[in-house]
Amino acid sequence: MKVKGLRKKIKIFDKVNYLFFMVIGLVMVYPLWHQLMLSISDNFKAKSGGFFFVPRGFDLSGYEVIMSSRYIWVAFRNSLLITVVGVVIALFVNCGLAYMLSKSEIKGTKIITFLVLFTFIFNGGMIPTYVVVKQVGLINSLWALILPITFAPYNIIIIRSFFKNLPISLEESAFLDGANYAQIYFKIVLPLSKPVIATIAIWTAVNLWNNYMNGLLYIHEKSKYILPLLVRDIVIGASDMANVEVMQTVNADVINAATIVIATVPILIVYPFLQKYFTKGIMLGSVKG
Image (tube, rainbow, N blue to C red; front, side):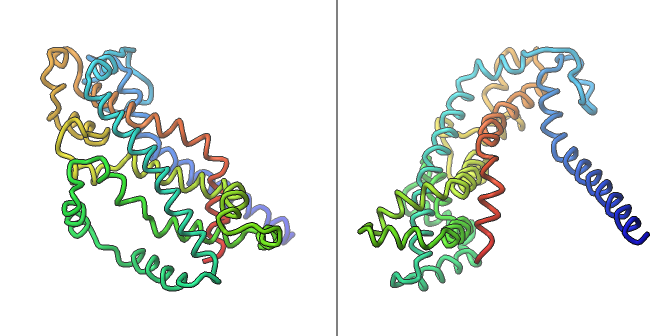
């Protein structure tokens, strides 16, 4: 009887748990779903506002306005550029440093580990970082959006923990065969570390793609705009697109929604390809500190 009662309680708990997380999931997904439905709704029906669970009519004029503007393509190109270059540099820096820190026999690793942890807990903050970026002449440069976030202490700790979990016998065998650290790193460690590399790549890509605050601080010329800045301008009506004649016939909310969808979809497309590595990478990387 006690076993049956316990099983019944577990089933009730599971159902409540599922229901709770379904509600949380719907609350988180709805804002994007609202923008998607609004972006393809009829212009006049969209003016009534309210909740959008399904499109009201069907009209793609918002996307036509966005696609006809050169600013969206400039911002898209810049966002894509900083994301691709930033992910490559971040993986190169963070993985390389994490591998070195995973080798306690290498001199100086304890001091560097302390410095990494110190900057993880006590970072400089926005104003000192802005001063440094200005002093090195990166203001109004796309490098100002890439370089400040390529060194990520949290990511380094995750990767280092993952490397430490790899079988030590593989490296010992390679050493006996005459391999050095660089050969082991590129030929053994990296191929076995796809889960954590994919995890760090998606984190960095999302961070770079949505890098609104750094763009706002460091970018002033419109030719250097990234998508978050363009979305900001369109939403507050500061974009030059607000002056074109077509804006008089197309609902501004529809254009805003279409812009947000276009800015969000690329990163949503990338995520499913890396998702299979995501859980394994973060779990294995967080087992040991």
